[in-house]
Image 1: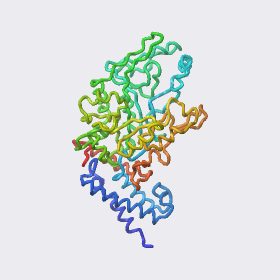
Image 2: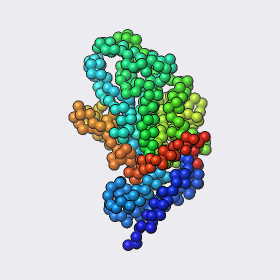
Image 3: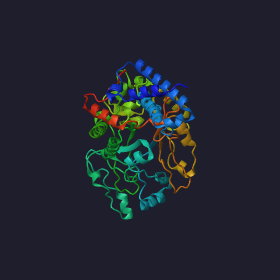
Image 4: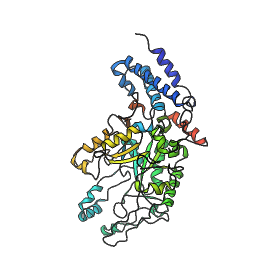
Length: 451
């Protein structure tokens, strides 16, 4: 057999080239045909490397075993392929539902359950956001937000007086700005009280891990009043309209630099509509998306108010939960992974981002039923959301959700290219990514897509 050393040495020399030579800006300025040829060549190289290295090749590309130089060469080929040829929508990651949520404190929870056992649906607690990223591999979070332009609307929790506890939780709640909680005055425990505080936690972790897969922040705008059975003075939410959504965008921009955010404008590029770009494969590659965040609006009924006359979300930050055929259609929420299984698979294959749920209201975790979980993972939805990235030992069922073979993500089983390797998806070159981010932040456009 002929030696593979010359080919591997050439690959290493190419991969060691300066970052600006390999990938300038968010996307290479070369025509897409040139990029396609590069990806095809890389795929052939990976195939040859695997065939020559034998059955343990998958272990090499997964970061295990064999000779050190061969292992590094094979891994670098896979890294290069992921960076240049795998797109944001071709990965599946784990998400957490109501990611800020802390179940009600024990004495208050007992009081709620005496009123209605349905409150058992709130028996789940998430770690702080940065700990979810670090220890559980979460790459999609959900934040429920309430407008509070004057501050103080959600500062008091009158029902806590029923158990003799202080109704004031944090001075942060007195400050103007969007608040994060589940249900006002009833289910209000949270790991971060304000939207900005939550985002600052995301930014700090992201800055410390610049090679991470993009983090999708799903935002649910809440403004529904609830029944106040004891006339305790429950807060009446402020309706979300264009002004409140503009405040939301401003708060996001106050935390993240433009180069850290993937926006609808970045994806649309020169296309007529956002949907047209998505259907034409307009999502950025991982080399362009790593270390960044993107935002989605959960409320389909508020997409028009958020767009505010901009049908393809021009100048906006959030990708709205929309429907195929509409100009803003890029992200589609399909929470029923069983009932919508075939639809989810079709949407993913066509190029849309999809979020679905593996469980709801603690039902699956209490029974140990994995049917919904397994359907969510098999659906190919890019974001699989759960309340249980780790099991709740009190339930005794062993139920939890993880992306199989992927930590924190895997190549999407429906649409990822054949040469995609799970081990190459995240942090192959953190130093290079940090240098690129610094360069992008100095540029006037930040993120620029070539078409």
